[in-house]
Length: 231
Image (cartoon, rainbow, N blue to C red; front, top):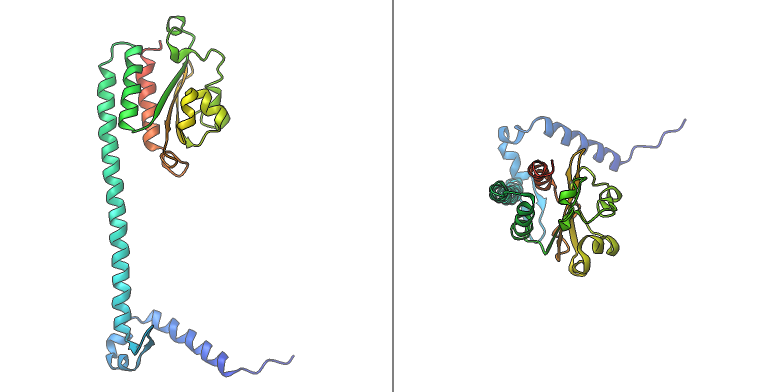
């Protein structure tokens, strides 16, 4: 078998790889041999040459800016989470003061619109208790509205999404024409089921990329509170 003659390019490339690998294993090399830095140059984008030290300083500055940006982002998330916890706390206190189911529902409509800054809120409940059927939240006798949960795979976990026009109108009526994004929060247990729907006129207010931890906590809290009135 004939072998291809080794070219100068192959030799240089192989040598470069070996030198690079060796320097990675011996990062202290230039500290012990600083005079070599006088001979190490890199092509500059404009004129002259940039020393290895300049390149290292530039890299550290870029890394510092990246870390500062990340810290600012984390701080913003932390502040937003803290504000959300305060909102949840205030909502819980208001709900605990309610004497009956009707008062709980009225408080939810006002508080959710104000605290979540949404355009519309719909609450639907399904229970076998006839005394509660007079409330408009129990008007879904056919279960059609709660069926939206199953269709969207949100029977247990909240979801943020966009709804097609038929589903949006089913939940929000004519107001659906002004809504662009939605959050659906399932409620209930084995004895009853419920659904809290929030709609916004902002396209990105609720989206699939948003975390739903806060909505999950809200759903569990409301289920526990409403359960006392659904017995």
